[in-house]
Image 1 (cartoon, one colour):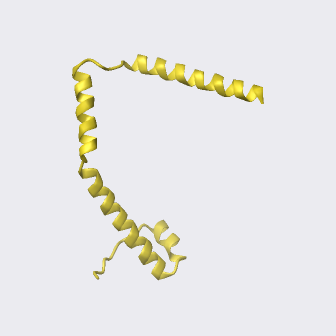
Image 2 (tube, rainbow, N blue to C red):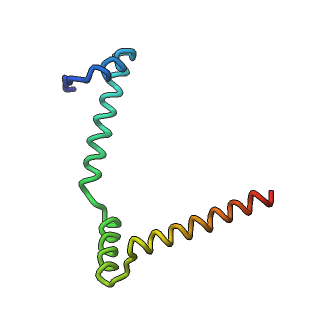
Image 3 (cartoon, rainbow, N blue to C red):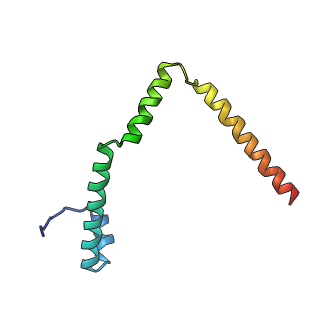
Amino acid sequence: MTTLTLTLPDDLAERLAVLPPSEVNAYAVQALADLVEADGADSELNEETIAAIEQGLADMDAGRTFSLEEVRARTDAALDAFASTRLSQKVQV
């Protein structure tokens, strides 16, 4: 085991002061482990993610894209359809 000394902001130190020292240590170790694991996960792309990115780039090259206005119109239409379906379901009940 290695000991690590940290300087904490006062508000965080006050919140941790109400916990037993063993819990503070366990929380700190878990938080650091989660942070290191998450950081490593972000730096490597798996094959599925790389394939999806490549497919997206190929779609862009082939002109299979939508303008922002088209996306907004499609989204608005889908939301309107969903809302009217939900409204009709409530009326039937």
